[in-house]
Each structure stands twice: as C-alpha cells, then as structure tokens.
Length: 241
Image (cartoon, rainbow, N blue to C red; front, side):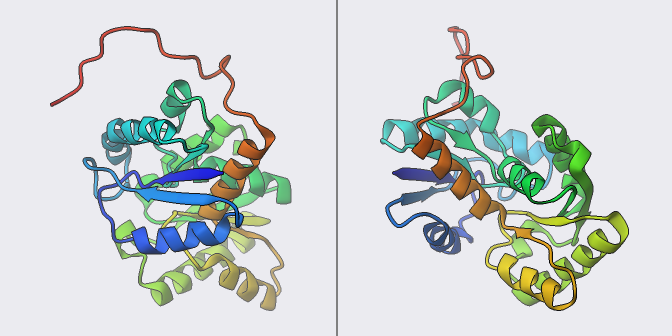
C-alpha cells in the first residue's frame, strides 16, 4: 500500500526525520511519501495557523489520490483539513490526534495529552469532543516549547516527563498521549522511564498511531462514510491567484 504523509506547513526542517520515522512505523510493504505545503503557515500553533494551511493541504490531498496513494495522513496534532478532505477523497484520511485518542481510550479509563503551547489546548479539547472521548480526557498539559524548537530533544524529554508525572499524579491520567507530531522518537524512552519509576502506563506516539490507523483502514478496505462525509454540492468556487 501507499500512504501520503502531508506536512500541513511550509517548513521542511522535520522532513528527513519524518520520512525516517514513518517508514519505521509502517509495515515493510508500505510505501511512504512525505510532502510539504507550498503556501501556508511555517508551523501550526493556533486556529489561525490551521485555517491558513487547509487550502493547500486539500490540494495536496487531492493530488495524492490522483497519484495512486491509498490513504492520507494530515501530520499535525490539530488534524487540520481531515474533515474536508474526507468529503472530497475516496481514500481514507486520518489525523494523529483522533487516532491517538481512540487508541488511548482503548488502553485505559482516562488519558492526558501533553502538547507544545497553551494556544493549542482548546483545539485539542475540542477534538476530543468531536471524536466523542472527551469524557476520557483527564487533562491537556503543555511544555511551553514552540513547535519549531522541539528538536532540542534533551530539553523536550525533561519537560515532557515532568508534565506526564503531573498528569498521572494530579489529573488521574492512566494513559499519556504526546500532543505534537514533532515529538518524534521520544515515546518509548519516556514510557520506559515512567515504568522504572513506578508508573506502568502507555505513552502514545501520534504519528505511530496515525500510521497504524490508516494502514488498518486500507487493509480492511474501508473509508469514510458518505452518510457523514457527503460529497460537496457542485458549484463555482473561486480560488485565490
């Protein structure tokens, strides 16, 4: 199968690591393609950023289907463009946030998300309501590190671990979700460190969750329901030039 990972941002600083990570997460027989936006925000840290990324994301998603890809991942924890893409594509489309929350809800009675900045907390809370798992959401915590700075791994892991402990001890979280797709390559180490310190809880990597979710849907031969994601009515739509 072929999966297109769309980075809904113009910055390409994560591309090499993203390609490596998704290839690792995917099955051996899965071909992974990664692409950035040509126009839009450099990173997504607000509803405004998310709105700006959607037009070109949709163009890239439509292009991916035409190129023969079997599924599309919107590689940002805000799941930008997933719903409109489901309306216009005949292949499955998933986002890391929705995928992570569904996995987390299957692994424990409550989960907490640890994300980048306070700006995105309401966005994540809203997604939990849309997915229908807001009753399982114990909290959304943040490390106060901008997306474009999460490559500083030691600083990131220290901040994530501290917030994870708070989520467990203060918020009663039984599962932990990394709330940014830029938090690559740290889930396993954090899960092991928590276990060594007496907290045997799962840590969900959102990119890994999205990869396995899209692979499962493709393997099952299913896509989004046309009763929910109806094809948009035919009409004139003027694009910017």
